[in-house]
Length: 238
Image 1 (spheres, one colour):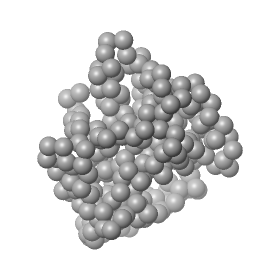
Image 2 (cartoon, rainbow, N blue to C red):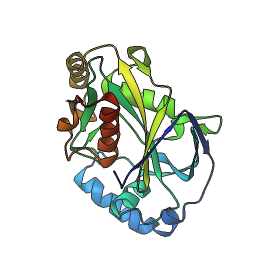
Image 3 (tube, helix red, strand yellow):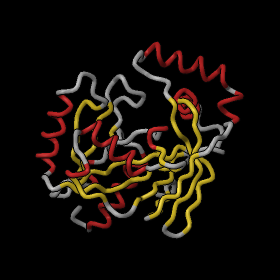
Image 4 (cartoon, rainbow, N blue to C red):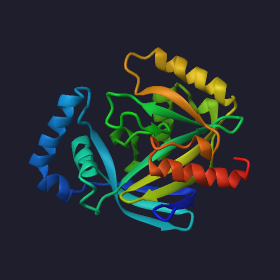
């Protein structure tokens, strides 16, 4: 995993403050044209306000950063153009759902999303609804995204005390294991029933990952790196 670094932390110190992102300001016309092209292909894309990070710092069991407000169009262009401005990073939380029999629960992103076909844990880019007293509440963000995508609430799982921060290039995926009391097969049926009841679900299906043999190219590197670490900790049978 030479391209990946994973930090395990228990404290998040994520301040939200105004900042004029040079990339978004200087490339505004190009960004608008890029987003318009994406919208022609996927009319459901919405250019909402989101939060990105800068000045990431790991200090023992603490992760600190400063977050700023921008729009989704800028994030999408920045990503598609290979992250040309490294003064910012995409720091997002993910709920790593794990069943009682050890299966991790991932969802396949729908065709109408910006990451169609990719396999992820429940997640979403932080936004202003996740800000509490000037701080980004990533635990609340993860709980909200898990409920929106799967129907599961905090009463359905036990959240780990720590976060695994998976650093890959300009992204930091903050993974939190959520241990459910139900088996993988039961969780899969329950979540897929919830998706079937939605008019336009973000996910098209659920995949269970029980071992390294279940890892696929549809999973981003930060997901496979996290899972490889989890299976290593679980022992040779995983």
